[in-house]
Length: 134
Image 1 (cartoon, rainbow, N blue to C red):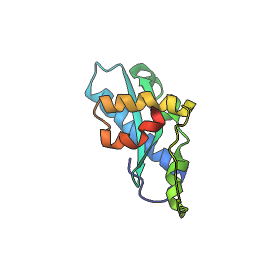
Image 2 (cartoon, rainbow, N blue to C red):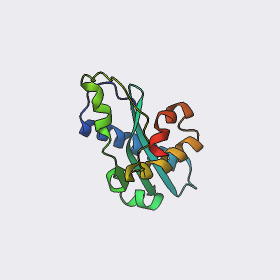
Image 3 (cartoon, rainbow, N blue to C red):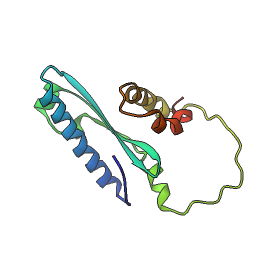
């Protein structure tokens, strides 16, 4: 999902939920044998790609309650996109470092793998985040 302007996190989530709802309806309607679906909505701005939400729902659950929020895990990564709204400090020098794996990176790594393996996410889009999810 491209993010073009300064959107509030509520607007961003609302747009992502709408996209997820449309994708779920479309896939369940198109394939009667589909019993469960997982939809991952990523936001993209200025070359940064962040997870917005992941919805996993079975067809029977969706028929009982077609509210995407009931079946969705939300990510609080919107702050990463907002950093482009403020002037960036000048970087004088850097040194390589290897950060320890965080709980967030462990949660997102399998999703990047699935999206890459299914062809929904290109190697070029994943490359900047390899150190984060590795």
